[in-house]
Image (cartoon, rainbow, N blue to C red; front, side, top):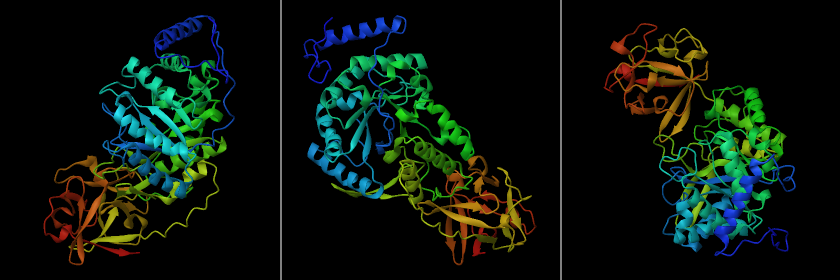
Length: 506
């Protein structure tokens, strides 16, 4: 069949009346080609590196998986296009000023694009970005209640993408990601779906399409080796929580391996870590898994001149009862169209910028203050028993001898709570198994986001109770024992001096 070409060498989009037949014939032809001896016609390869993407994900507060329209944090579904543009520009101003951001990754789903009123308004966020020279990545999130990493409704998905690509296919600043994290498909299934998308939506130039890796977009090797995608970019996700804890070197090797030989065409469209707990991402010697992961990810990106979009700038899945995603790079504030962003963790922001290729000067770390924590009734100090660095080591009271396992750091956990971190092990005071029962023991454990590692200092004169956030119970020396080695437990808070503590800097 003769294909009529436009002046730029691509076939023009068919008219609405011929579009269904044209797409059916195109899909049929793709199926026939796939079934033959690997006959594939591909365009020239994409550019040699992706460092031009210095980006952030702007997400729905509550995450982008939704059975309804997507309304990213800061917007309201009652907003007009002009209001969305004004809000978006306020946020883009701060992203650009603080970190040099030039790319935003925005979610779409079938409900969003099908809702003409909201889609026309939401487009203000896209158009505001491109008008200021930002790149925009539009990514589809599965939009069914239990789609399991598969496209919820194939016909609706294609209709959605037809609308999006016909609107933005000619805009060189807009990129298209057919699906976020296609983990419900086998590798072969996903690659066929993605290849059919490329043929079906040919108004989207392949060089502005990002094909996700297999699984949770976490492995590019199969997609990289499939010649049907030689002309596209690739979308790569990597999080520490996908895998067991690793050393920095192991993370670097792991990330590089899963990029395959296609790092030069890869964009790290999602990577992120806790930004709300005061971690020092400038510390090359840190034993924290988040720090190791982000430092490794940034180094691999820099080594390969890869760009990326951090998850998230704002929005995302709230952490515990915080009301915001602990991974979010920015603190969001303001109202109406007067919206503001400030960096949540300066060292984390610097590591992301380093990954983008910037020269960064990390701020000098604030000197850490360690404390001796004494219980009132016995005068003895909180102490890691049989001193070691193991997870699960029990916490007790012991005569103070100036040892590192009797010294503790108070790390801000937000909302008036603290993580109490052992100087000796770097691990956190923890109520075992997040129990809410009276008598549950206190142990040390690798620091995380659990509320069983967060304690409120409730003042009682010059003393204070240590009240666990998850149970609202107090750290207690059972039976008011004065013996060395008595194990600390949680109990319902009372006025006993065996629940009253002081801290003294050491």
